Length: 77
Image (cartoon, rainbow, N blue to C red; front, side, top):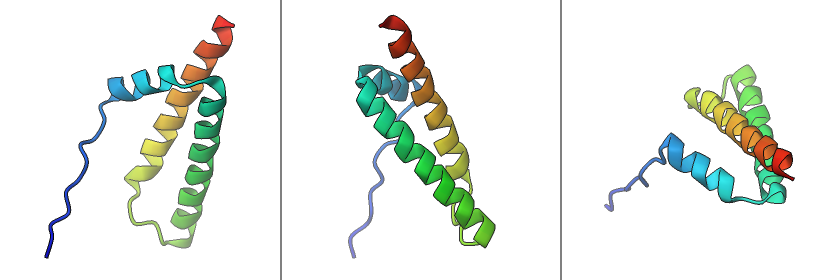
């Protein structure tokens, strides 16, 4: 039986750097995906099928990081 290895978690600063390198279109797509995921997680919570409740917080914070990066990009132009 093969053991599953987990990829190392990204630190907050590396996530911010990744967001700064993305284009506006890529950031908008990422934000839309995160909002959809957040909606699905809230739906799962309401129906009682949510397995990892901490994921809601993670998705919400990642969406905020993307929104901040979008604001920075838009203010530069």
